[in-house]
Image (cartoon, rainbow, N blue to C red; front, side, top):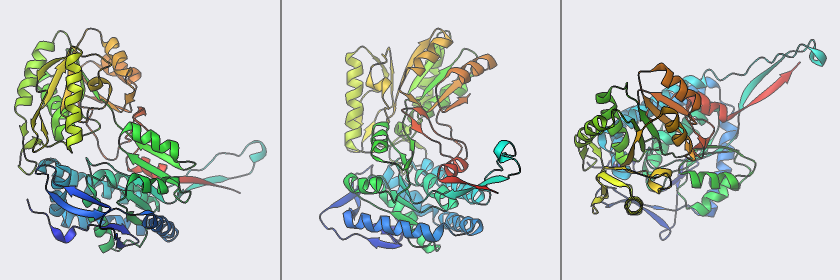
Length: 480
């Protein structure tokens, strides 16, 4: 799979210009399967970061005055441009994110939908009539309109380098905000290609800036009072640390999890086993709502696990450029070795490896799809976010007890429940401490318009176009 060099820009994008002069302080971006260097990007220094901040402020002053129809039209132009260049973006995502090509194609389709939904939402941002015709408000009328919050600092992860960046950029553009995007250092090229596309469709200077910088320079943006909001997607520890440093600005955090799924005795085991296998190992589990914990009713446990093994055996592992591959490379060597360390720790503490459990190709960062049982809640592979092709499976005696087990996690993003009992559905919805419960589906289910986010250490606030726009705007009241 050859990369299209015409959309590759190996410098930061600030004020519709390509900025970056360092030849020594650079980021090397690699193909995640063959580990070859794709591009070398100069890290933005402190002065270039300040340039991005000042131009984002100026871009906001201009763009915030654009009409809803003008914002709508820009978003559709970006959508149409992405549709024309979809193959180029697919190649980039496969190469720098190591994402299987079928999944990369799905990411493009979702990104197109995000832009479409954002354009639609731009046309219906509205406030509310406020009832106050009583007491000292007698004879008064009041209503709110929503106004853009200001320049937004967006920090996006590697696993959806286009779609998760657009979950911040698209609602900001719909709302009338400017954006500075700091992409993951693993996958900056997709974000820079998006910036190039935005420039070509005429987005004004300063409205979107993509800054490739180290964490020290990113903190300059985080702490600058001219930036009015932080929208971060990534690990819990990093996210909460950033919030502590963000000062007075608004913060939305979309963080990780160790998603659980329950299979009760009334479930369709053929469907559940196939979907949970896919949800556990797709993209090597590098999704924050990948299935990590599986709890199965004791009466069907043996039957389920045999079906699950068959379903996993049908998943294809290998180069992400190959059609039909589900399990590709881990993003880098450090993550690969961390997974091995966590599994070894679990083995020492008594966990049983049902299958997998080891690195199988160090030259291509491939880790075997792994299933553990007889685990304990204090094992890292259970209590922390694995972000790898690893799941644990345990028997369930009592439904209410497994709900308590799931809730003891510090995370609460999404959960799944396979059941045909409405009483189980109602009980789980009432008692599970998660942002969303998916019935007869895996926790990895997401429609881009739905309110998406978690509780506890899994996040703060919600994404999904309408909900993100609410986060990026403020109500301004008029009383007369």
